[in-house]
Length: 331
Image 1 (cartoon, rainbow, N blue to C red):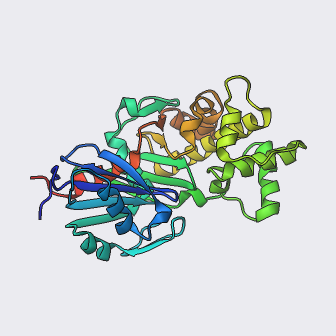
Image 2 (cartoon, rainbow, N blue to C red):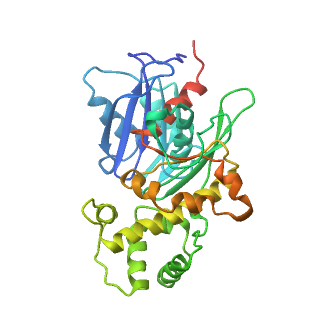
Image 3 (spheres, rainbow, N blue to C red):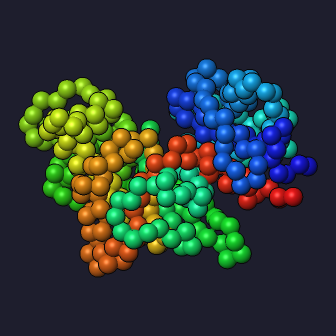
């Protein structure tokens, strides 16, 4: 079995989202994905169909020898069911159908975690604390369609162990009075409020509407992108949208601090997902870092942990490539 990728037999890496399936090719061991492209997820009934559509769009025909694909949700055994895409497929049947020697399907935040050691300074925006330390355990989390969380632990003999989980479904980290009021409003509407119910793309409008009710203000029906745009507008942000982003950042800081304590992430806490790259100044100038550190007796511990925003494009593809690079024997 060929292990190392080549231009003719590259590795295929993918990141499957509810809207798009992104793919890239790794043509050399240790290399970054190239020819990155995307196909609409809804136009395909599974991984094989989407991957073939991507490969058909490449000028020179290639035949991947191995693949690693990240998906949003838990990965258990051979059967993969993705509710946000509507896909249901067998990993082994897909591997043989695509003519691959090796295929892995992993949780998207496990893939994102494995990208952390290969990210450079140009891929990160510091949000407070010291420099990151890849020799120590790290955590990655981020709001997108949901709220993903994972850890990455260095192994004594070299390499890394990703720790995927479902940490976004813990209870909402409300501490301040306004946050408790927001949770009370949303609880009355839908029952239990998880962290993901607030700290996600769909959570932004939910938070915006609840804040308006607490403040006794009228609220428009706005999308997550409209809320972020109005909240960071350079010519004067809309006050309720701005407050929504500030409360969002404070809640995220508290949640990130909880993750750092739980995982012992002294190497750093990395923020990803689709929402945060649109609000970097809110994270840098707002209450994110204050709430990250505000853990009573553990404040000094958290002051010594870096928080950074991942700005690299398609970091899950980087993580999938890194996973293959460590899994498959180099020549």
